Length: 398
Image 1: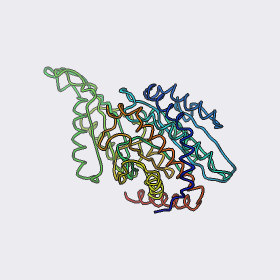
Image 2: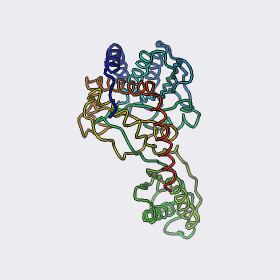
Image 3: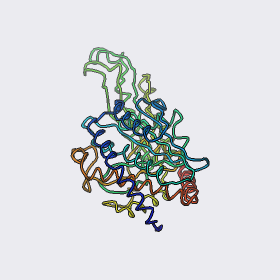
Image 4: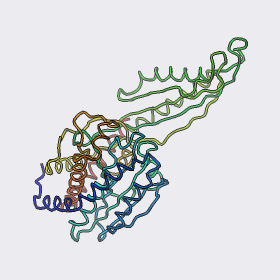
């Protein structure tokens, strides 16, 4: 384990304590606003205003996403570029996923680096990333040129245990509409071509495919529109399909096989079809060196409920960022162990002292991580080499 510079630790704690009242106030304000995906107007303005007041150059509505922002502070030239990402969208139930803490924690991280980095060269790039819960906002922002100006990407997220993630799942989601020919199901069924039959054949094709894909592949489907009453051969029917894998490259192969199933179902039923494809989620490239650095600092700052890394978890738009640059998200405990996200327990704890402590600790841990890299530039090279090797390994496992 890396030895902690106690003097640096104390200076970090002292500074975060100074700005903590404002950080906690912002967290509570965002919690009360509870703006759902694509409607995070006031939450975004709140974070932008504080960053402007603290010397950051702020761009509003970037990367094809409303209520997004990019805030930059640069000292000198040639230093590392730290990407600090924050979500602030709520669920329909309110902030049942803890996103109200992210912006304040990330701002605390940035201000602490700015205060303590002395005259060393570095760049801070804070991205406000809306619509995580619905559109996968980071995916759209990335497709429009965001995140290309950072060397590493860091986030925080409220959780039952303090830990980091290893693997997340790549995800592809499709809506397919089959078009057949309506006919009376009793009097002239031979004149019809059933769009619903095409859906059912596609479901059967997926079931047969399960035997011939890797065991970590997940394939799910549902009928969105079955096409009408039982006495009519359905002329139109709609289904949704979700495909996942822990390997982005492998999932691309599964997608091509899925498309052949859809085409085959169409041919067998003499129907036609159209396909809508949602933005694709990539699997994270785990950066173990960065994870270890973060968790070493989590222990040094006495974070609560420290747990081993989550070896496997679901899908996140942060995976797309981490597929291109080294990154990590510190999951900070603020609810009891075992508490599910998107729950009343998250809401009940949203403005608690535990939530405020999570904001402070996350800022301290991430600031310490960035300052460690500034103190020891070889760490950045180790992190980037680790990332490059693991990405190559993932691409080779096809």
